[in-house]
Image (cartoon, rainbow, N blue to C red; front, side):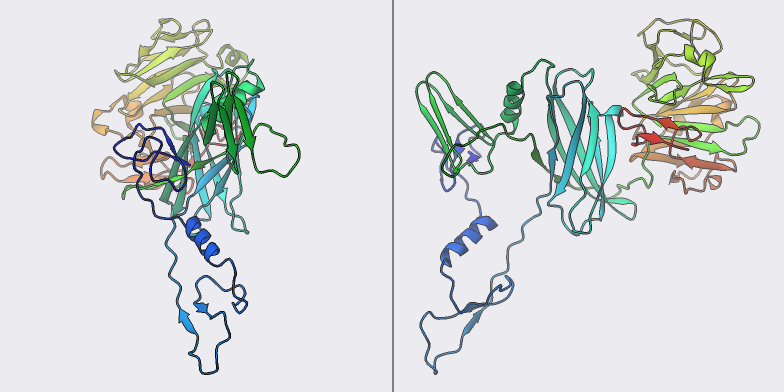
Length: 517
């Protein structure tokens, strides 16, 4: 059963039964070539009584032997071998089978089980799955589909929490990549929507909403009419009877009572393969947060250059377990880093730096305040960043963390510490998938000697200003051969490789629940 497909009546919503040439509104339907299922059904019907002399288990590609039903005389003509027609090519219908979602657990942890089905056998033995949604921590997560020895794909489990989320529908965008020699050779996409219900929603309301979006057959009986459905094999049914109507459902079950219950909340989403630009190259080491570690810093150099590629970057207190911020800041005294003491006077979510129409701006979201050039701008009042601006965290106690805007780039901001942690770290806050424009850079001498870095295709890149050559940054990249890097530098795929940070609220910046040195 399908909807009217007449191109002259695109808004027709009448259903067309199998085999019918017109819909209920007498709109002619386009002729569709018979599917492989229809061809096999017709073949089985024509050969319902197979010959006793037919070869058992004959392969489909072998020749078909035609034999007369009556015994042939000795002088009869030999058997005629008729080659079978080659089977028409059928495109592979790859899809994701999604299950495990329970909308009754409103405000709690959820787990989605995703199974890859129908994928072509000639693709790579490992595929990359990327999900983007407001429900997922940090907005995105990445997993890998691995082919088993049986030929199928190992399922992937994605965890998220609907705590403090407004009830309603949330969109999840899916991308599946097949890599060959470090580049994306094939790409499939799909989008599905899941429901976060109200906390007081009943089970019946939840399932009715689910069926209203995933049903493929709906039967209604109004004003004393009768609705009847038979042979509903593999259908999600929504049957409604109002105003003394009678609804009858027959699922071709054996004699006896039939237990009718709600269907399992599981569904299939078709994966659509999309064309890739010829110049599209996948980053060999995707990451949205990383660090450049200098094992032997010289005078004026930082030991760690922390890299972040986020639309909004949260600055906050350093925590080893479940930090709330992206850039984790702690107080540095003359004796070194102190993660206790004055560090506790920083909020877990202290300030946000994001892109604005004028460039970049900072917003105070803390309980302790932020001083910008010695002035508190007020809470939740964004202020445009200026080159050389002094940022103090917090306003009640001075000197805990003091930052300076040392570069305003077309694709990001560079911050240096100007307190006792000046030799420990500095920060690149970059926009994801944004190309640099070196001619428009505004930088102090302290930042002008740093390399030009940017983020594209899921990873960090280095740009040589003299030659224009772009180099992907990965742990195996020889940084001493790139301009702007001194010796003893290495690339780490975690923003804080010197610490053991545990994140238990889902995926972290580097798509793992635990970051280690």
